[in-house]
Image (cartoon, rainbow, N blue to C red; front, side, top):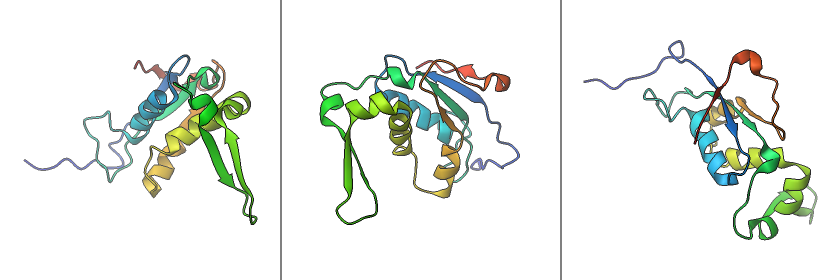
Length: 142
């Protein structure tokens, strides 16, 4: 029996909607990363980009368990000497909840060309509405 190798023409991409309201940030991020990479498909191959499109809605209603809202911090460097910035997740979730979700999902995707290509198929919205109804996305239950 030979190993199945998916071809670029054989890959069928679907659209899925994940509702993040009331769910932990990491749980939603792992589901989104799995769908983006295509690991839920029986035809998954790590060397081929066979993932689907993912729409995450209600990113502003995401929950951080424990004391993560006050203790967890996001760090970034501006490029200038001594300009390491830190933002608490309580502030980040209040001001840019979509960025927090994208950052969590990006950390679960490989740092390769396939991973960067997979992240282009991610759409995150703070509210319940999205503008991809024409693609007929399916609700992904988890």
